[in-house]
Length: 557
Image (cartoon, rainbow, N blue to C red; front, side, top):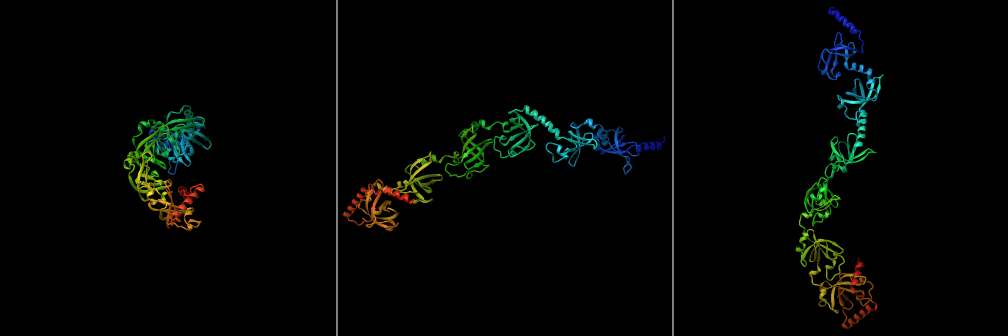
């Protein structure tokens, strides 16, 4: 047969082929991106390399079946497809191979709107929501990968198949969860992957179910957020703390996989030892110092300095500061350690007895005053206290502000020292002789004295005499005429002359009479006798100066 005749016969048999039919062809050439197939026509067909699972397995001369899509394209070449021929053949038995609910292996061919195209012998669709338990943001990572899928739905007429990978994962996970709940026990250690991090902890995937790792069970030390210790996706080993099989809940611990640092705390940090640490928190009453992860001690504000008056810890320390301290005490059960900073230095109060012996004369500034006395700063942080009763031999002082103001320089003598209570008692009057010890050498009854009115009360006037001694002129001793109100006759600052008519050694007071200043000795004797008789008649000593002064103080207050 001539070659022309042969070609005509082949051409006529090719023209008899129906489009969309499956025909046999011979591979004549394998190129980088395409395969050339002779199907007996005047031109050869070209098939893209991606239609074959592995182009390397093809051989020139071997027969393959292809689908004839078109007899000729615009260039006169046949359009053929290996993939579509496979799909057409597979569709005939798809229902028997992969019925709904069965598991099919497939390869992800492409990303399309709303999901992925999967080849399971035929093209099927998988919605993005069915790719994984958590829908992924990026679908490109799946293209080219091979997975198992569950066949959800088949529509033969439309040649439409819907797959799910998520349902398969969830079914497998449910089986694993049941198995895990049957075998898991508190005290076991298991590997897991950090799935999600929250403010209060992290959820750990134990390959079958999630367990909660609370922030308090992450570290023996102080952490403010779980992200300081964990990152999403990392694998960690955790201990099972609690299992609730009814609610399918598991509590996990991370710190429990390491030794509790408090177990050997007294051996590592004996009382009296000097330690190093870092300030991790300041509170109004002190500072927390981390000695190692999981071990913190408290430096109470009172243990920061022997002498400085600290009102808040931030005056001395700041968070993050490295420091040394001394262990003062350990409460192992409560996981508490007491620390001290001042113990690093000698206690200046240990030297107080030596520096301020009883009887020594000292000087300092008035730092503070209370109703009962004045605090005198002798050196930084060391005060002595002068009680109101030790300021003057002669004056009754109700408040130290009558004599001092803050910042005044004063001299005093040391009366007592108590290093344990950190107290020094001072006296000012002890620097002077007590005029009342020999009052007779200063004043006698009948003496005429002069002085300045210092204070008025409803029942008399106080007069300042020599040597700081006060005398009281009772209202009845101001004038021969009846006096209704003392202020009608006398004013503070007035200079007056008066007669001493009473000396009360017990009360350390003098009774004066202005009206008797010019009396003769006979007149004075009569006045004194009648004054004493009046006192006896009313049954009380009107000249009890102590009571009068106390009463005056109350009225003034």
